[in-house]
Length: 117
Length: 114
Image (cartoon, rainbow over all chains, first blue to last red; front, side):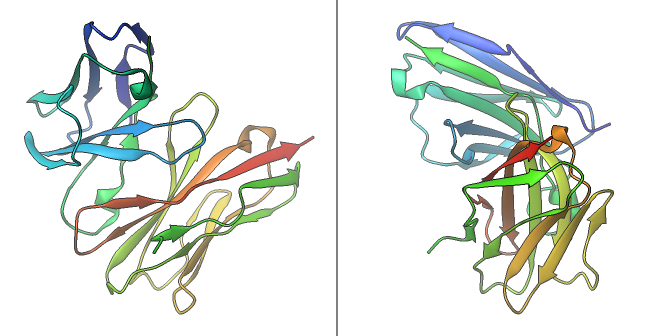
């Protein structure tokens, strides 16, 4: 089963709100990712966690704060967002990270559509 | 330079026909992996097929096959017997042996016509 779940599906928030996006996988994958995707564009990598440690932060503004409580869960805490942060936020996981095999295949969740007013 | 190039912003195909979605890549790394994903309007990115740079044979997964031409640095996706449910955005992606990035192309929007 290659299932990654994300909650909520949709989120509307004001610029002063604090909210969190959640991602969960039960495939025993050791790497998890957050992507941001604008309409009709490819996903843009934000963060990579490998073995529950932050491995990559793609110069993401500090108003986005990732957290990996355990190997199955990944959160993205949002605070003081801007309207331009409105996008589809995708979580993904892969069996491995740092090698080069099919185990690097990333499996994505359904995403959270975020609207910042 | 673009790491992944998808030159077809939009494609149309008749139901039950085959269609080829183009993807070229740019890397000097001898080790790399190529991936295709499908993204319906619902948003989820669905993994379709993988090709490793050292794989001797072209990858196939059901109705999906990858036409891998290493010398030309192309990895075209072939969908046979198109179905209405194949209408979606398709992304080609690459991961190099060195470095940590997963490079996505700009995508091709496929519409299957009944």
